[in-house]
Image (cartoon, rainbow, N blue to C red):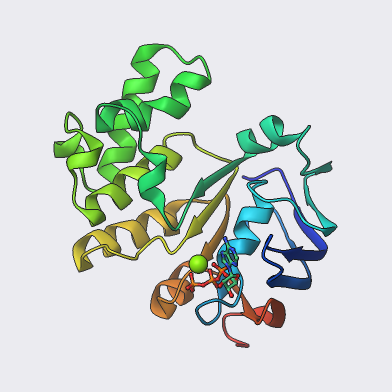
Length: 223
Ligand code: ATP
Ligand code: MG
């Protein structure tokens, strides 16, 4: 079970060119909740996730994970609690083999190599690419890279799983496997997607973002 509540409080963010991407967003996600974040292209979903994970920092407002505010100083601690799959997850693969990429997180936790291997094998099975473990990540197809990046985050067993468009680029079989994995993940999940069926199947609650603001926030039945 997750330990940390996520609080997003009066968040404002503009990109350096002046574009105001997030305009006063507030919500709370309770431990163990699964929340889908949906909205049109350019509505601010990815920006919001980048603010939650401390890749970007807000102009105003704050993000609080448990009782710790996400700041440059607390980032290392926050990152241990959150596992994030970015929309451009290609950038998350940088080792010479898929195995080493997926092992990177667990190795950082100083687990012994037997436990690391067990975690990698389990994560690769969950996303259906155990056969790719000795391949070079840069030689994979788009969907295979996506699956490898997801495995890299699952292998860390994060307290909170944050995924930006996890099913994009996945074929129906891989998509189904991922949905089943997500349904089996009992910790907090935050998932942005245009794949509404996936969101409805994996999430309890949906937050609709429109033009950098929360347009609706309710259970999947309500919305
Ligand atoms: P999509 O569904 O297409 O992934 P999104 O909801 O994730 O869209 P964001 O990527 O968060 O949208 O972008 C929100 C707004 O900020 C958009 O208007 C976008 O053009 C703008 N934006 C995104 N990245 C930058 C950037 N690096 N510099 C300036 N503006 C940006
Ligand atoms: Mg996006």
